[in-house]
Length: 204
Image (cartoon, rainbow, N blue to C red):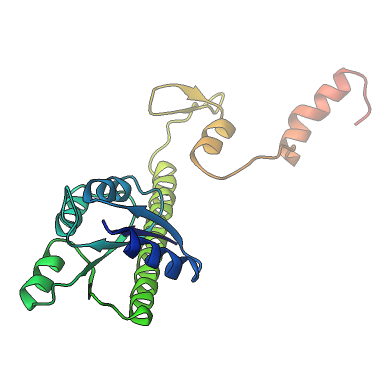
Protein backbone atom coordinates (compact mmCIF):
# COMPACT_ATOMS: atom_id res chain seq x y z
CA UNK A 1 0.00 0.00 0.00
CA UNK A 2 1.25 3.45 -0.94
CA UNK A 3 0.74 6.39 1.43
CA UNK A 4 1.07 9.99 0.29
CA UNK A 5 2.41 12.34 2.96
CA UNK A 6 1.50 15.89 1.92
CA UNK A 7 2.91 18.52 4.30
CA UNK A 8 4.93 21.67 3.73
CA UNK A 9 7.08 21.10 6.84
CA UNK A 10 10.12 18.89 6.24
CA UNK A 11 10.22 17.68 9.85
CA UNK A 12 6.61 16.49 9.70
CA UNK A 13 7.19 14.63 6.44
CA UNK A 14 10.34 12.93 7.77
CA UNK A 15 8.52 11.89 10.95
CA UNK A 16 5.60 10.41 9.04
CA UNK A 17 7.88 8.71 6.51
CA UNK A 18 9.84 7.01 9.30
CA UNK A 19 6.66 5.98 11.10
CA UNK A 20 4.93 4.58 8.01
CA UNK A 21 7.99 2.96 6.44
CA UNK A 22 8.58 1.03 9.66
CA UNK A 23 5.09 -0.48 9.16
CA UNK A 24 5.89 -1.58 5.61
CA UNK A 25 4.15 1.18 3.65
CA UNK A 26 5.57 2.72 0.49
CA UNK A 27 5.71 6.46 1.15
CA UNK A 28 5.65 9.29 -1.38
CA UNK A 29 5.92 12.93 -0.34
CA UNK A 30 4.56 16.29 -1.46
CA UNK A 31 5.60 19.65 -0.02
CA UNK A 32 2.66 21.62 -1.43
CA UNK A 33 -0.92 21.17 -2.55
CA UNK A 34 -0.15 21.28 -6.26
CA UNK A 35 2.24 18.34 -6.07
CA UNK A 36 -0.13 16.42 -3.80
CA UNK A 37 -3.01 16.85 -6.24
CA UNK A 38 -0.86 15.74 -9.18
CA UNK A 39 0.26 12.59 -7.34
CA UNK A 40 -3.28 11.64 -6.38
CA UNK A 41 -4.69 12.22 -9.86
CA UNK A 42 -1.90 10.16 -11.45
CA UNK A 43 -2.11 7.25 -8.99
CA UNK A 44 -1.67 3.89 -10.69
CA UNK A 45 -2.78 1.83 -7.69
CA UNK A 46 -4.92 2.33 -4.57
CA UNK A 47 -3.49 4.95 -2.21
CA UNK A 48 -4.00 6.48 1.21
CA UNK A 49 -3.34 10.21 1.45
CA UNK A 50 -2.33 12.04 4.63
CA UNK A 51 -3.14 15.60 3.58
CA UNK A 52 -2.18 18.59 5.72
CA UNK A 53 -4.92 21.23 5.63
CA UNK A 54 -2.65 24.28 5.47
CA UNK A 55 -0.25 23.99 2.56
CA UNK A 56 1.10 26.49 0.02
CA UNK A 57 -0.41 26.81 -3.49
CA UNK A 58 -3.46 24.64 -2.77
CA UNK A 59 -4.85 23.97 0.70
CA UNK A 60 -5.45 20.38 1.75
CA UNK A 61 -9.23 20.74 1.75
CA UNK A 62 -9.06 21.93 -1.87
CA UNK A 63 -6.77 19.02 -2.74
CA UNK A 64 -9.49 16.69 -1.50
CA UNK A 65 -12.21 18.54 -3.40
CA UNK A 66 -10.29 18.70 -6.69
CA UNK A 67 -9.22 15.05 -6.41
CA UNK A 68 -12.80 13.89 -6.04
CA UNK A 69 -13.95 16.17 -8.85
CA UNK A 70 -11.35 14.68 -11.19
CA UNK A 71 -12.73 11.14 -10.69
CA UNK A 72 -9.28 9.65 -10.17
CA UNK A 73 -9.00 6.18 -11.70
CA UNK A 74 -7.72 4.47 -8.55
CA UNK A 75 -9.50 4.14 -5.19
CA UNK A 76 -8.18 6.78 -2.77
CA UNK A 77 -8.65 7.18 0.98
CA UNK A 78 -7.96 10.77 2.02
CA UNK A 79 -7.21 11.75 5.62
CA UNK A 80 -7.03 15.45 6.47
CA UNK A 81 -4.41 16.22 9.10
CA UNK A 82 -4.79 19.59 10.85
CA UNK A 83 -4.78 21.56 14.06
CA UNK A 84 -8.36 22.63 13.32
CA UNK A 85 -10.76 20.68 15.50
CA UNK A 86 -14.10 22.50 15.38
CA UNK A 87 -17.19 20.60 14.21
CA UNK A 88 -17.54 23.04 11.33
CA UNK A 89 -14.04 22.26 10.11
CA UNK A 90 -14.58 18.50 10.40
CA UNK A 91 -17.82 18.76 8.43
CA UNK A 92 -16.19 20.99 5.80
CA UNK A 93 -13.35 18.52 5.36
CA UNK A 94 -15.65 15.54 4.96
CA UNK A 95 -17.90 17.43 2.55
CA UNK A 96 -14.84 18.30 0.47
CA UNK A 97 -14.14 14.61 -0.07
CA UNK A 98 -11.96 13.58 2.85
CA UNK A 99 -12.71 10.10 4.18
CA UNK A 100 -11.27 10.76 7.62
CA UNK A 101 -9.97 13.57 9.81
CA UNK A 102 -7.22 13.61 12.40
CA UNK A 103 -6.06 16.55 14.52
CA UNK A 104 -2.55 17.58 15.49
CA UNK A 105 -0.75 16.69 17.64
CA UNK A 106 -1.82 13.16 16.73
CA UNK A 107 -1.26 9.90 18.55
CA UNK A 108 1.01 7.64 16.49
CA UNK A 109 -1.01 4.53 17.28
CA UNK A 110 -4.25 6.22 16.27
CA UNK A 111 -2.77 7.52 13.02
CA UNK A 112 -1.43 4.08 12.05
CA UNK A 113 -4.82 2.53 12.83
CA UNK A 114 -6.59 5.04 10.60
CA UNK A 115 -4.10 4.49 7.79
CA UNK A 116 -4.57 0.72 8.10
CA UNK A 117 -8.34 1.06 7.87
CA UNK A 118 -7.95 3.35 4.86
CA UNK A 119 -5.71 0.82 3.15
CA UNK A 120 -8.20 -1.96 3.75
CA UNK A 121 -11.00 0.18 2.35
CA UNK A 122 -9.27 1.04 -0.92
CA UNK A 123 -8.05 -2.53 -1.42
CA UNK A 124 -11.60 -3.80 -0.95
CA UNK A 125 -12.90 -1.18 -3.37
CA UNK A 126 -10.29 -2.17 -5.94
CA UNK A 127 -11.17 -5.87 -5.56
CA UNK A 128 -14.86 -5.13 -6.04
CA UNK A 129 -14.11 -3.04 -9.13
CA UNK A 130 -12.07 -5.87 -10.64
CA UNK A 131 -14.83 -8.40 -9.92
CA UNK A 132 -17.43 -6.15 -11.55
CA UNK A 133 -15.25 -5.84 -14.67
CA UNK A 134 -14.80 -9.62 -14.80
CA UNK A 135 -18.56 -10.06 -14.52
CA UNK A 136 -19.14 -7.54 -17.31
CA UNK A 137 -16.71 -9.42 -19.57
CA UNK A 138 -18.41 -12.72 -18.77
CA UNK A 139 -21.84 -11.27 -19.54
CA UNK A 140 -20.57 -9.87 -22.84
CA UNK A 141 -19.25 -13.30 -23.81
CA UNK A 142 -22.56 -14.91 -22.95
CA UNK A 143 -24.51 -12.31 -24.92
CA UNK A 144 -22.25 -12.71 -27.94
CA UNK A 145 -23.20 -16.36 -28.26
CA UNK A 146 -26.91 -15.90 -27.62
CA UNK A 147 -29.64 -15.20 -30.13
CA UNK A 148 -30.00 -16.27 -33.74
CA UNK A 149 -26.83 -17.17 -35.70
CA UNK A 150 -27.02 -17.00 -39.52
CA UNK A 151 -25.41 -20.22 -40.79
CA UNK A 152 -24.97 -21.41 -44.38
CA UNK A 153 -27.06 -24.48 -45.18
CA UNK A 154 -24.30 -25.94 -47.34
CA UNK A 155 -20.85 -25.09 -45.98
CA UNK A 156 -22.02 -24.34 -42.41
CA UNK A 157 -20.13 -21.05 -42.20
CA UNK A 158 -21.51 -18.42 -39.79
CA UNK A 159 -22.15 -14.79 -40.72
CA UNK A 160 -20.82 -12.30 -38.15
CA UNK A 161 -21.98 -8.76 -37.36
CA UNK A 162 -19.77 -7.30 -40.10
CA UNK A 163 -21.42 -9.55 -42.71
CA UNK A 164 -18.32 -11.75 -43.03
CA UNK A 165 -18.68 -15.52 -43.26
CA UNK A 166 -16.48 -17.54 -40.92
CA UNK A 167 -15.93 -21.19 -40.15
CA UNK A 168 -17.80 -22.34 -37.06
CA UNK A 169 -14.52 -22.95 -35.22
CA UNK A 170 -13.25 -19.44 -35.92
CA UNK A 171 -16.48 -17.75 -34.88
CA UNK A 172 -17.02 -19.68 -31.65
CA UNK A 173 -13.33 -19.41 -30.73
CA UNK A 174 -13.46 -15.64 -31.15
CA UNK A 175 -16.63 -15.17 -29.10
CA UNK A 176 -16.00 -17.61 -26.26
CA UNK A 177 -13.32 -19.50 -24.35
CA UNK A 178 -14.10 -22.72 -26.25
CA UNK A 179 -11.30 -24.52 -28.09
CA UNK A 180 -11.67 -27.24 -30.72
CA UNK A 181 -10.13 -30.65 -31.35
CA UNK A 182 -11.08 -32.40 -34.58
CA UNK A 183 -12.22 -35.97 -35.15
CA UNK A 184 -14.58 -37.85 -37.49
CA UNK A 185 -18.07 -38.90 -36.46
CA UNK A 186 -19.32 -42.45 -37.33
CA UNK A 187 -21.77 -41.18 -39.96
CA UNK A 188 -19.14 -39.20 -41.86
CA UNK A 189 -16.73 -42.11 -41.59
CA UNK A 190 -19.24 -44.45 -43.26
CA UNK A 191 -20.57 -41.99 -45.83
CA UNK A 192 -17.39 -40.09 -46.75
CA UNK A 193 -14.17 -41.56 -45.40
CA UNK A 194 -14.74 -45.26 -46.25
CA UNK A 195 -15.83 -44.61 -49.87
CA UNK A 196 -12.81 -42.35 -50.34
CA UNK A 197 -10.49 -45.03 -48.93
CA UNK A 198 -12.03 -47.63 -51.27
CA UNK A 199 -11.57 -45.27 -54.22
CA UNK A 200 -7.91 -44.90 -53.32
CA UNK A 201 -7.49 -48.66 -52.94
CA UNK A 202 -7.04 -48.51 -49.17
CA UNK A 203 -8.71 -51.20 -47.10
CA UNK A 204 -10.99 -49.59 -44.50
